[in-house]
Image (cartoon, rainbow, N blue to C red; front, side):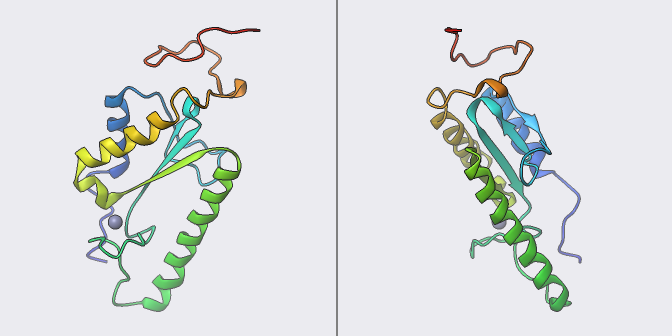
Length: 154
Ligand SMILES: [Zn+2]
């Protein structure tokens, strides 16, 4: 288990601060959504998962972190495979529900600038094009860092 980092800099925290820096409003860990996405951007109808490369078995062959441990393979392989297929299912469910999904992998955060750009591109593509549905609108006024749908016809 020596290779498994469960402590240290939390990737999720890094992504949160990126989203803050970019000025997006988000909620955390919405349990009513499949897979409890780490960050939820209701106005953009978008969610972000921040995945640890080991635990979510990052499929990228160039990933420096992911990989099966050498010992206890009969334990780890099915365990990680289950996580991976559950992730896939959740992604499909979210897509069905009309959410756009971005997965940011732990290893991508080693290059924070690129990850920041990726996050910004992902969120800005949905910017004014897919306005939030009424039930996603916050009931109380949100300090608006982004402007959309200021005019209501109702
Ligand atoms: Zn990775």
